[in-house]
Image (cartoon, rainbow, N blue to C red):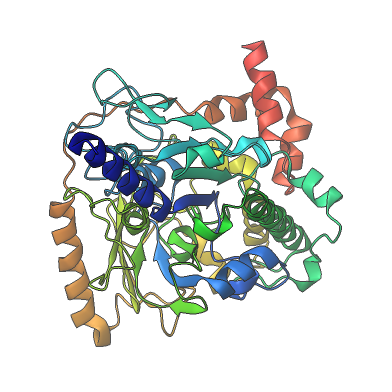
Length: 489
């Protein structure tokens, strides 16, 4: 046989073997979710499909995002690099600015390795196509970072001919939205508000309990979506060679959650299911950054993790992380600057703008946090205890220190306790070191105007009865109001 032909056949065969060995990867990203699954001990919710993932896979108990707001957090995960370092740390900013040439979306490397990259899914709510990154990008198309800015190859479907494929699917039900009431109404077993367990920093009020139950209804809805995706993999005979990863993009949208550097804002679920390659039933307690998830995807795909990434593959035998460095910066009209370090035992927060309170009356959140409205009223009536008052202080403490082993809800700030002065100094210095290490690659700052500010003022002036309902703890339908506002303006 001709030597060239023989070599070609061998190369083709090797490529085929590699393609068969390279697993498909599905990254399920639930929006605005803390550790609020049954398998993590959340009361009142049923999540059988995610429970199964955890039982037959690996459940990580200490995974934290690098920013508690969607677009900076997603920007970090999309590049595997801390959002401050790539100057993507301000929410909804720099959308017209190309990513610095030294960085690339991780899907670029997957494509180079022969993966088909897929965005969204035909069967989930809204098709799950959210990207939300703070650099110039397009959903579909090629990427060179200069004139071409496509992140994915195609939308919504994975087929055998796409193998090996990577699919990123957003599960949006848990994000605040006008669909929450409808999901609850259609649920076969809506969560009982009397059976939910509220954090100590939230007032025990019927409106707040119902709002929490609605949130858990959304989690049950997306758990069903997870089951649907697994069923599709089975029907297409691709389940055995597919890694499924489940995470949240940031913490729950409620008090001390999304937007804040406290545990409910940074702490996310992280479950990896891959029976073919990973022993199931594991629970890992080591500290993981969300950027490590990106590096882990590349590692599954047998792709070398680029040196610029701040993430590390979690299944590498040498994996070790002592801290997750997190940042909170611009969010809509609120210009903030806070930094945090989280270890397995400690949380340190430095608030560089302590004059800005936690409760800033931010327009977007006014529409979406019934608990805040209820607790403001209770505060005025003198009915909140000290833990419940924490969110409503007139200013923040310049520094916060919490012993997570003894105080997982971060209620007791140890900054002024001399017994902890040594650990305070260590974490303060370590945070300053991370500040230098993650210095932004440039100082471009192109924030978008927050239209929620305009809509809130319009509601106050044009719909006072509806505004009063909001103050009473009713979600009045931001998306519907936004469409009406845009049509009139």
